[in-house]
Length: 499
Ligand code: NAD
Image (tube, rainbow, N blue to C red; front, side, top):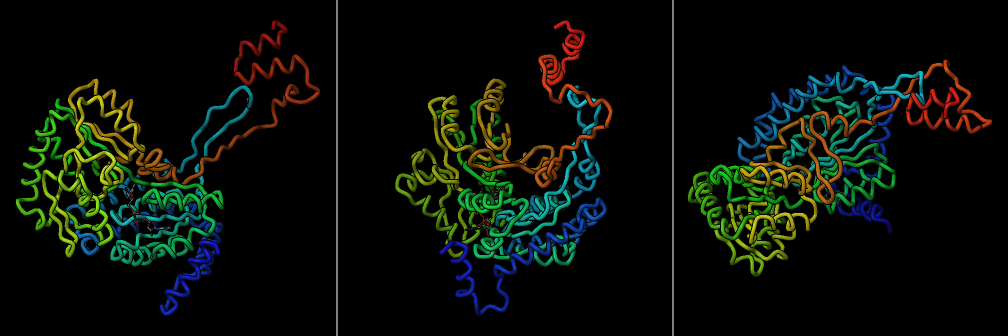
């Protein structure tokens, strides 16, 4: 029995008592209907795209309190983080799309050559068609709406499948998108593995997935069946290298902000581990303790300024990392946890084994191990011997080191002297490389992620030279070679019989 059949039967068996079950026929009808609407051309026009983007802006403007409240229900996310990282950034994203959409949509002139002379050429961005966006729980609004902005800007019809692990956000997204956006072109399907599996069985023109790399492989396998292109926004272990030639106070404040100040470490670009020298590590630990205490007080478990762990599974996963032999005795700060309210305090560890769970898997939570090196140069070996991370951070004043780091380290993105902030710049493509993902988005890159760049060449009937047609001759061969190389001088030489 295929996986799909198993999933299908499990829907019938497990959920037959429920009033409305999303079944294979629903998934298939949804895509058929949306494809019909796409083919009718509704979404292609500039006006339609602008209208939908403006509606998304209204959602951000009118419903911020509801969004903040849903995020609090799902993650205990502090209001500041919700308002800034989810709503304000989205607002920026929409405004940028509204401002630049005409330019993005405009065909771009391309150069022509002697081979095609006389001709003109352009690159036309066309929508891909019916696209599926599957998003994750940690920034449920940002990670859902931001790709949808790209999909709409590029003129696609879109189905959004939010994460079931953030249920309040998922149902609010479903409600708001239904209320504001054109239902003939934008739909939300709520659900978990079963629903996603049914959706993945359909033929899409693009699948944009955010989540872990294990599921990323499932997505890519399903997409391969229909030759559907994918963007995979995955994660990884993002290292932070701290040189002793740094402003240590600012360094640790910025690390704390990107780690515990970003959904309590449950962010794809949160610092995952620190690399510094054995000699400098005690100073880093002292500075971290001091600033953590200044930010979260003596009782960080009671702080309202950090999110909670999303659910028991993730709490137990993190506890397992912390309780492993040779790890539990390496805690130098924090380590408190409460399974009832899903809280884990900011925790720093020193010199955990490199083959421990905490150093093998993405942490995605409030634990931060420090790995010490004999000299900082060793950091390159540690980072480059591991799967390519989504982000890599360096703190230093040393220009040579900055240069070597940006040249030598391969990561989705690199930030020197800060953490996570590159996410906020729409002029930078955001995405991974290798194990941390495929493709990128944000700003114009989102538009491009959901567009096909169509080559269009216009020729006239003038200049129909015989040299490309049989019967072939040495002279034609010589001329064609010079034309393909776009070498005007050689072409004349051949024409004049000089070569
Ligand atoms: P998740 O559990 O919400 O899963 C992501 C999506 O996959 C959900 O919509 C879920 O329904 C779907 N899914 C789950 N199991 C599936 C299956 N068997 N088949 C098909 N679909 C399935 O999120 P997660 O994976 O826990 O997210 C955390 C991971 O995502 C981390 O690795 C993190 O680094 C990464 N992430 C990356 C980015 C980025 O922008 N690159 C952003 C956020 C999170």
